[in-house]
Image (cartoon, rainbow, N blue to C red; front, top):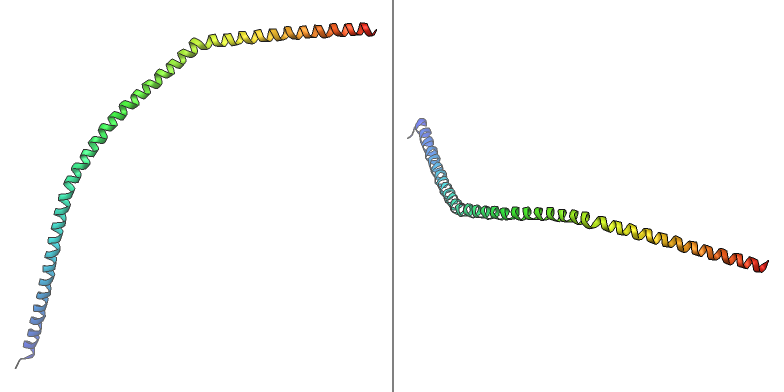
Length: 136
């Protein structure tokens, strides 16, 4: 027969064996998790490297297009300056004579209009004088 100390030692040994088995199962599952994590990291690395290459190529193309856009913007700015200078030249060259011609024609029209008014006023006065002589 077993003594109390032997029974206690046997129970502790059984619990220790169960604990070792549980820890073995945990370690096996942990090993699987680590293995899956390695596969995941390897897959990410395999997909990320080509993706980074494509991003680098895209950025290079975008930079080339930005250089072209800068050139186009510079050309548009140059054209704007040329149009502004041409407009100023046109205004200075033709603007002054056109303004003088317009002022002259306005003066002629005003003088002709006043002369016409004087003629009409004179005729009206003459007719009024003539009709007052006939009445009187």
